Image (cartoon, rainbow, N blue to C red; front, side, top):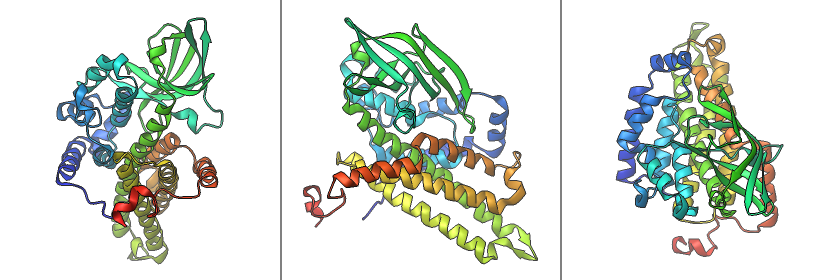
Length: 378
């Protein structure tokens, strides 16, 4: 299959790479670690000025109306540089609202496209062993939201967040104002430095137009998987590149350790894992942009991403030895990012269980050439 980028997509990737690499130097990353800020506000402003914050928001609301492949190019560059900005959370939240609640929240979406309002989201309950932590209850002619959801990215800084809630008729996405009466925020920080907050809801009154249709959950989840995996691909690629450079220079027993067969095989295994993730991720983005079914592909990418994060991260730390745990040396940041993204995606075991359930109930795979959607390429 040909996953070559178009000329416009290559230009977007190049611009994003320049923006993130120019800002996210090792020195600036070290300064960010010490400042304790929830995200890189100056870099976020640059993203707004260049339009990177609104690529996936529909044109009708002031965005660029681009697809997941275009966003993938930007997020991959962000992951390479470890840029602490909420690009995927902001854009996918706005895009989801535009698709499922445009009539009710058009002003909020347009504000997000202009960069005036920050949006965030949380899908943590879909992969949590505890299930959905928020409960949506009907009381006469209004709804009440009770319960908690942990570690919502930038909940304290966002103007609105999309969270999961269990209702009488299934799981829904709910648009929540973090400053609404009955909402309690407990601020925290992810180990890689991004701000977060536990959100506790105590009888929060919810209007009907704040509850999105049930199908919005699957729509958003698949795109969130593609976004987080795109970040992970960028993180792991740069982590591996730096590791290969290190083992090529580090000398032991009068030889570069990169010449040892065990080290070479470890680096080769890491490269193969990233190539598997890259090809599966490109297919997922293509299918999302083509409005094709991709439940199995999203689960496959989720699994491959968490496995690659673990493999590359541990191989990199192992061959770096003691310097790998020195916080004045930059390689540890990549492992922290991989841990965060793996938590966003959920564990590989839980993902395999979901994929197994899907395979048990579907006797064809989405990429088989005998399906109607693929007749044109037979």
